[in-house]
Length: 276
Image 1 (spheres, rainbow, N blue to C red):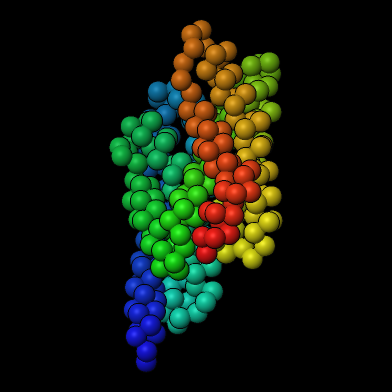
Image 2: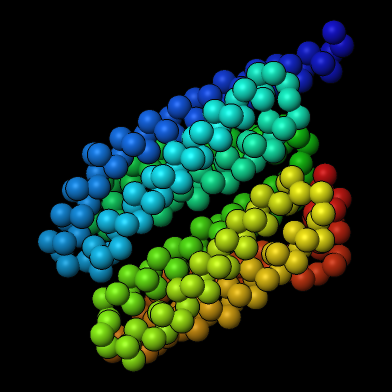
């Protein structure tokens, strides 16, 4: 066995155990958090008349289901890593992106309602964030490409959060359709932009046809900007009596920052095509 083969074997064993732990933890904690925290969150939000009380009963279990799928993908990847299969990296990339997506938003209603501070889903989010970089560096992916993937992943998460928040405000304003119209319009477009970024985040590291990844990323950027900025400006300057900061602004800003790489051919060549 050559020295390089020994190193790859050690890395495969490490990633195999890591994937196994993340998979078992992801499945178990996704179930546990629903049983322990869903009731207290909904009771606290209802008592405080929080707007999220209308959407949390649907979205928190939905994200738990996505988290369980992410955990199963980690378990699948663990078999590939232990057996030194090339497909393990591909499954691992999909698993880590899905887990980061699944375990961010549920912390918001948990902390907003003060039912759980800090949000318990961070116990799954931060280990997956660390493994995201370890997994990519293990495959010698450049730091520039890894950071681009993180920004695209943030756009994936934040645009979906904007879609959830728009759904929440829409439901709280109906039957006043005039007040609800901006949220009715931007809710689906933000979510579609989110899914485009999700495909892009995964495709950056595993897709063979990088031009298709670039097109998907560009579509996500333009859709996020066209939906996100009007939504944010309406929320900041027209929704209340006084101008105020709105979390809606984060999605389009992050999307725009990531978008420079997709728009500029020089940046695309340097960061993506030359970044392994």
